[in-house]
Image 1 (tube, rainbow over the protein chains, first blue to last red):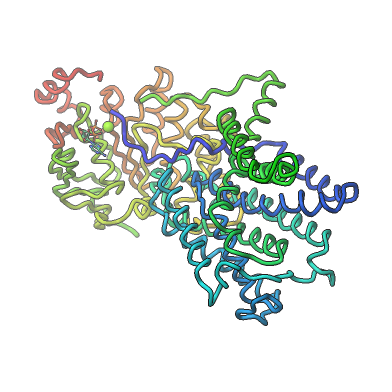
Image 2 (cartoon, rainbow over the protein chains, first blue to last red):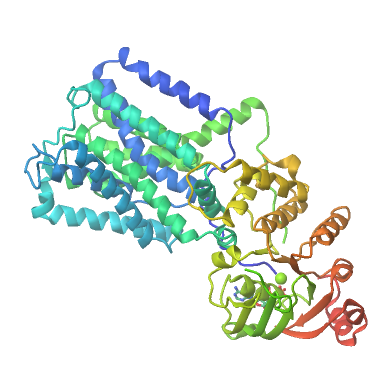
Length: 348
Length: 252
Ligand SMILES: Nc1ncnc2c1ncn2[C@@H]1O[C@H](COP(=O)(O)OP(=O)(O)O)[C@@H](O)[C@H]1O
Ligand SMILES: [Mg+2]
């Protein structure tokens, strides 16, 4: 007689045992990304690497929830958009000016606060759902907010959105400067990435992984699993908020199209292509996506891009359910000639 | 909170639980004294595990009252019961498969403390306690091993270690010996024997060789109800118990 378990199993989550190479590999990658702009054309720096980093941040907010909590949320692009819209509504110089006059130094924290609050709200609304139902409810929230913004003229200027959100000056330089944008995005991404790796070692993060593996046991050990879960969505909202801010400054504005269904699906595609096994997968997936997005349009006509990225998406999901990271992991094992570890089957 | 000695560790008053039309637990009234070792016996499907679930709050009883050290906990959610020092293991191990043995124990240790949302790394004290628990259940050589890689016996040991993490006043073990090897069984028996009397112990166990030597009192259940209760010597010779065990076979 088996006991009913409330175990959370997405099959996507990687086993969270520490790997010794994660820290050195991450630092090496950071070093490469710091010097790369010196040798590649500015177009690549801003439109390929910079854009990949910004999308990667938003995708990482999804990966964080999926890898460590077992929750796949489709609301992360919308949550990012909340931060972008908050700033766009507040800052001076935006067209049309809705509130205006609030300096970036105030508007940016407010944007992050709004995204965190929206993350918490999404988490609270979806707190009882799992798997496909969680996908559906987060998608519904994303589409709902998108439609609300698109039809609300007074606050969000409807379909047209808000233009001329140029971003703050950093060290006296305009944000539109390629290198200011790139290095800001890189530093933000590196800090958020480090934050994720740190958080999952804390009691909060360990309990989150406990919820992924066995929510019933987490409750039996004294945790309020539902509150924990909502808090994790809040952290993911904070991460997505940074991505939303950077995307808004990069695009010099925000419109409903940037947070619509298409954008939501793009984030999912990036996260899955890269692999939902480790936060770095989000950035790998985003880079692959951006490269195809940029060059497929030259090779084919624009419309074929979706076919191409869709085919890649399918191929990756079929070949390696845990994305490029999973392929890399398997190659690594092959090279070390170590057989893949077999999980012990729990007898009844 | 200091309980007077005569207050029982656990008191069930007419506790029942229905799943649809099935009364998994019918109408159970029993009392376990503080420091007592209680064994719960009974054939498969007797409602033993369900009774544990009602005590630890996995789901509420459909009738009756549960009292822990004199305090009515019938309506308390499971995480509050764990905080009032109820530790339990599960018949089918419920572990965090993707994490290491150490992380499993750290989660268990932190669950019993405040600041469960802490974003500071686990303290030295937490780690020391987790390691001490690992030693107690003989898993200290496997601290960094992923739980999914453990053998069945090791998983059972970890179950016990995690249940001990909250410094339980009431410890409930659900068939801890099931599937253990002949080498592991005596070790488990020793672990249970070595528990201080400040811990009240309730063990569900099919194996009489494990259950009877440690038990002060044995409760036998069948079809959701208690059929016999008494000291081990009486249970061994009780005709009703023999009928149940011969009828269903001692193995299952
Ligand atoms: N969550 C549940 N939902 C429906 N029926 C259940 C549930 N848990 C237990 N049961 C039923 O309750 C009865 C008692 O089960 P259980 O308490 O597991 O028995 P035991 O542990 O004594 O073998 C069984 O008939 C079982 O099928
Ligand atoms: Mg049982």
